[in-house]
Amino acid sequence: MHYKVKTIRVLVMTSAGRIYLQKRSKLKKENSGLYDKTVGGHVYAGDSFDSTLVKECAEELGFPASIVPEKEFSRAAKSIDLKTVAIIKKLDYDPHFESLRQSGKRKFTQIFMGAFYLGYYDGPIRFADGEASGIETFSMPELKKEIQKSPEKFTQDLKYMVKKYGKILRPL
Image 1 (cartoon, rainbow, N blue to C red):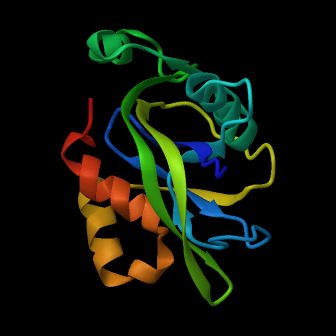
Image 2: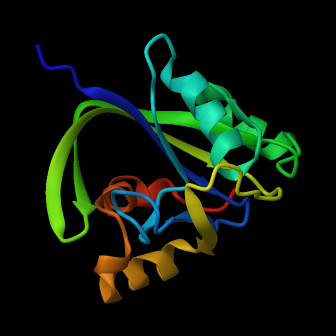
């Protein structure tokens, strides 16, 4: 029996609407050196999508995260100090998400059970686990222009998320 891997994919932006993009380390086997979503990770057996998100935010970029329900998200993001904690909501779940991956010159598609999230955070970033070699922020117009100009610099996952969720990626 074939089991698909569960994953999380997160876009976090500042309250001013600048999207944090992680530049993947050149040491990563897949998609090395490319700009990617803010945080991503595999969900291990016994863990939930939400608990994995909290763990990955702390491990990859060193910031605490709180996941709130959709109905509370806007109020929470506007009333909680975003310099101390990221406020995040779940956007979507796709049990058959097709992720185009690149390893050297080899490209392949992997199917994931993927949960997608969006959040806001204005605090400091710390590279905690070596998965990222840098972080850069883009406004949505800047990001769309850069993807159009140099699509090879960005992961397919990021391009998918920008296309699907771009209309809701805006300042608070």
